[in-house]
Image 1 (tube, rainbow, N blue to C red):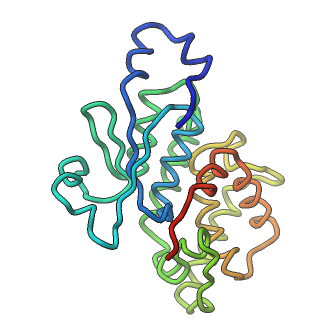
Image 2: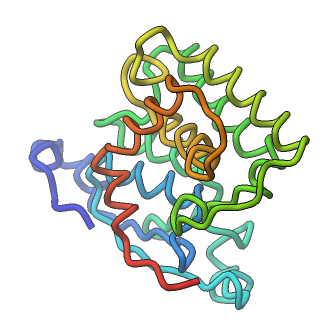
Amino acid sequence: MCALSDEFMNLPTKERAVHEVPLHLFADAQFASPYAMSVFVALEEKRLPFALSTLDLDSGANHEASYAAKSLTQRVPTLVHGDFALSESSAITEYLDDVFPETPLYPQDRQLRARARQLQAWLRSDLLPIRQECSTEVVFYARRGAPLSSAAEAAAQKLYSAADALLAQNSANLFDEWCIADTDLALMLNRLILNGDPVSTRLVDYAAYQWKRPAVQRWLELNRPPL
């Protein structure tokens, strides 16, 4: 989807050969998966050309043999790079950073990079009540849910505490420079912000700033079918 950059044209021949292997991202038909969004944003931030295909998860298209042959977990997103296919979003973004290091997605400092990966893993494995009660339809379809249950409220407070601890005073990003974990955290916060739940001004401003990134805006501008 991206044009070839000047940086690409200046790469050594061997590295250009790697870049010339086609990239193909598979996402959900509603473009509502936070994990597909994370990979999409990563590809856009790196200015990598890629094809984009969608699957109707409601009809079980992700379990069809043709897709299962590509996706080990039979989920979205899956990224196909030549004859190599990889699923699970954080594994994909780490792979992209290894193969296409010119524009990093993660902090260069080892401890900060580990912290960013920790945050990604946590957002994907914890906070289930938020994900259940504030689906991404709140974010991408402006479809508000009911007031939070006590379990979701407890999870939200845990989220706010972690975000406040990670964000330095007056910092627009988690670790000085933007990283892909900023997009993931902003998405989780926006589940609550756009649902009308009380979120501190500091975190609202942080999420709004992250939402303005051109790569994020390109995801938001994708044509979504009605629910």
